[in-house]
Every structure is written in structure tokens, then in C-alpha cells.
Length: 174
View 1 (cartoon, rainbow, N blue to C red):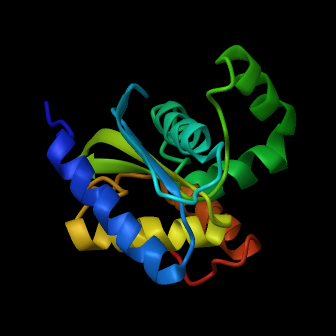
View 2: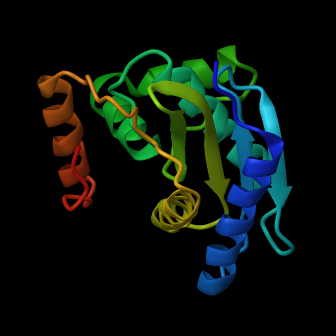
């Protein structure tokens, strides 16, 4: 069973901070295991007072939803999927989990091979800025946000690509 180690989580956090400083957007970064339990959390100087809790909730939410379905590739897809189908589910899930569910961009699962080993959440910028920081850090460390062997059904891929198009991320494709 693969795991995320604290040392690699710290490298991810440093890579996010590097990009955040370049963008001049202070953020908080949380990384959880596949079950949603916290591994690492850091708040940059100047980041909003609620960003640590928000980043943790984003990471927790990705773990919860991604473990349910390959349909939930990242926070933006999860947000749009719920908006289209059952917006009340997000509110109910937040209540049922004591506020741990927060659906927004800037969150994604982390895979080693085909195993989801955790998720991260970034909070402090816009959803787009948080997404840019996460992508930068993933690429720098070689973290995958999709399984190595993608067995996502084509109809799900088509749906996710349609969501990316709808939210203005048509260049992103599965």
C-alpha cells in the first residue's frame, strides 16, 4: 500500500509557496491521506485567517468525493457536478461532516500508480489561482492527480471535459 510521506508533503508545500510568492498571493496548503486525515498544513504569512481550515476542508472533500467516483477529478469538476445535479447535497454534506466539506477549485487527489494516496487543498487565492499553484507543485514533484492506468469510462470523461469547457477550462482534457 503506497502512502504519502510527510517529507514529500513538505516539498509539495514548498513548491506551492514558491508559486504563491511569485504570484504575490499568500495561501494555506493542506494535504490529507486517502481517508481525509490531515498529514500536513501550512499557512503563509499574510494568508487569510480562515484559509487553513478552508484548505483542509478542500482536501478532505476531494478525498471523500474522489473515493466515491472517478467523476470527481478535482474541486472545479466536483463543484460544477453538484451545481448541475444537487446543489443542496454540498450544504448537507458540510453539515453532516461538521463543516469539513468545502467544494472549490484548488484541490485534487494524488495518485501513486493506480492508488489514491491522498489529496491536497489550497486556499487564499481565487479558484483559478489556487489551481495554478497546485498544478505547478504537482508538476515540480511529479505528483499525479489521475491514476496511472486510466479506466475512467468514456462517458465520464466526456462529462468531465464538458464541465471543463463550461467553467472556462476547455484547454484541460481527460
